[in-house]
Image (tube, rainbow over all chains, first blue to last red; front, top):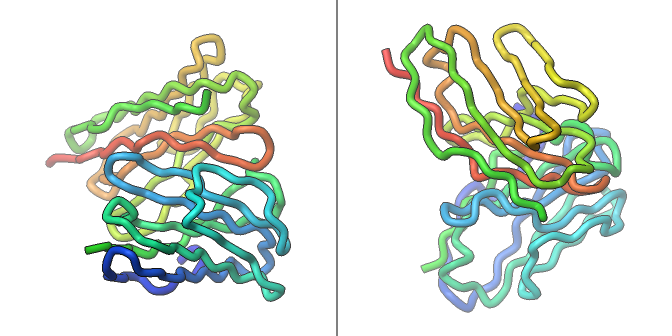
Length: 114
Length: 110
């Protein structure tokens, strides 16, 4: 158990819908990272937050947004969903604001878009 | 560029050594990592190497870094069935980002 909690574990929805994925980082960790894992794209970095502020952005689509709340949990919002958004979405956390140490990953939220 | 490349599959007999190879592109990467993903689980850090090192050994794991060729390898000695998993190579891109390879699925056969 990494200490990172992600909900829901599984989600099935239809194209055009909107979903919210939630992540609670390890106790004491201030950074939260979101990654998308799909069969054809591998593990893609989406976005990072540190103590409520956006720190780095990766290949995140404009239809996607994220935020980190004062209690440090984070939410990833995916809207106007397309079939290609079906993937495993991982949240990871770390103590530091820099990704030069160990990242602790949650078990992921599997999104299926039908 | 931010491409990390690794072979997709490796099959190894139990008790043999496994070698997983990876190439990366960012010569300024400070750290290089190996993560392991078991079925139904998130990624877990196995080991990492600082860019000024050539080799790091940690029990059954040996990491070799060839900075000139931007080549990283992970050797697992005496491979066990519990080592069956997906292994990801990752490089640090600047201070805030890790770029992962596609993962190598290691299958250990009896």
